[in-house]
Length: 200
Image (cartoon, rainbow, N blue to C red; front, side, top):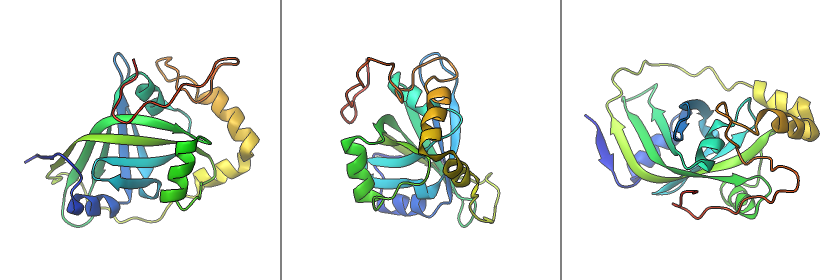
């Protein structure tokens, strides 16, 4: 039976922080739904109503595009070991640009100032609903370890190579929406959106 909570209670925070993987789903009006897996080391529970994760360079940037278009974001955790449970965080996101003041402050305060190779941006979720469900259908898995592939790929690209890659692959979503990661030449960067606000 699903249960809803207005905030991330301490026991739910403990559950989140004890997982090995989480999934980020997003969509905006008229777009495809995107779902991406992430490793739990990238995520921080900031308080009972906010979480953030350090996003790394990948082949797409759908979540940023959907947030920029005023879409919604859901983060899901599920127990692959121990007592079964699925936990979803429903809310509105903001993208913190790498190199920006808010990004730098959060990196220093919650990530010990350490960026993994290929760091691209941060995604901050203002949580509107927390929901748990049974998770009885989730299979049991034993983790074999973390994959080193993404880190090695980013290191081999180098900073200049990553900038070029992002400008080619991360500027538009599958549906042609701008991601806000790279501004057109001569265009100012958008101002950050206050927490809980939605872009027009």
